[in-house]
Amino acid sequence: MRRKLVVLGATGSIGRQTLDVAREFADEIEIHALASHRNASLLAEQARSSRPAEVVLVAGSPEGHDFGGARVKTGAEAMTDLCRDPDADLVVVATTGSAGLQPTLAALRVGKLVALANKETLVMAGPVIQAELRDHGGSLVPIDSEHSAIWQCLQGEVPESVERLTLTASGGALRSLSLAKLSSVTPEQALRHPTWSMGSKITIDSANLMNKGLEVIEARWLFDMDIERIGVVLHAQSVVHSLVTFRDGSVKAQLGLPDMRLPIQYALSSPHRWESSRTRLAIEEVGCLDFAPVDMARYPALRLALAVGRAGGTFPAALCAGDEVAVTAFLSGSIAFTDIPVIVQDVLDAHVNCSHPTLDDILQADQSARETAARRVSFRQYS
Ligand SMILES: NC(=O)c1ccc[n+]([C@@H]2O[C@H](COP(=O)([O-])OP(=O)(O)OC[C@H]3O[C@@H](n4cnc5c(N)ncnc54)[C@H](OP(=O)(O)O)[C@@H]3O)[C@@H](O)[C@H]2O)c1
Image (cartoon, rainbow, N blue to C red):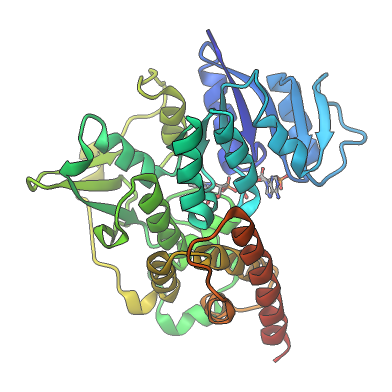
């Protein structure tokens, strides 16, 4: 029987690729519902081709668009309601930023399978998500390529055998630029990722390695691993997606072309593997694989994220919110690329940590960090 899929963030990079995978494996997956933020025209086009029962446009207007007969709702609560729909089997959470948190919790609370692309959800609220998984029987699988790689390496292994996780990082669009030139980088330059095609927020986060810091925190919660046992290595080719070192000294890695449809597909097919027609990795054409340690002096955003991951509490929520505001400001030309970690640092300095937060504490930290970051952005903009 086909499983019924809900896609949140359907109009984004991961959402569109999820629909590609669902189209390729239409015998396995049926699109049950789609949600996006404001992009009514693309959501309508997707609804006409994939024929979901329901669509949700969180903040835009559906007026004047043809959704192919789907029920149309608006608002964030309607998106969260999709995750509780008893007819849905699994939910892909591919929104950006904090928007994925409440829907993920709602889906887990009713025992659904969640395929999570939205790393901010786990970064902000790892312990709350873990408690939800423990108490309500839902399950969570990764879409992020690094975490999918680790998950695949861990198949058939017992947790006590794992010594260390190593996440690979391409180094992003600015990896060859001198430190002196980073302050004058334009959004167009920072958005030119050498190996992956992704949404703008994650592409900027990849250019300063904030993304890798968020991924370390994500891995900490997904695999229940002490943060000191999670490392990062530069690997420009983006062919080795991550590695696991076991206590006997053996190392497993997962390799593949840099194409997000593969980890998306595995999240939907696991524990099975569906036969795909996509191009295979030809390792002989790759030639050699390069790895290098990360120069921490070059990446203050990564340093901040790792420190926040160690501190825990509401710091990670403040980090995510501050970064979201700062990246938006950089993309709109209001601040310099190098201001992003400075603003995040300011937000963290102003934050009063709550070490064992409830969901309300996390949402409150998110809100107040956004306000602090917005003030810091306008200060830097006019100073
Ligand atoms: N792209 C990748 O290759 C990749 C890889 C690993 C992990 N991820 C993670 O996956 C998530 C999505 O990334 P992306 O690159 O696909 O982003 P994206 O291309 O910017 O797409 C974001 C999607 O989320 C929707 N959205 C934004 N704010 C929303 C809100 N408040 N409520 C509901 N929907 C909202 C957008 O709707 P509109 O189009 O209507 O604005 C869009 O559909 C991020 O957390 C990212 O870190 C992405």
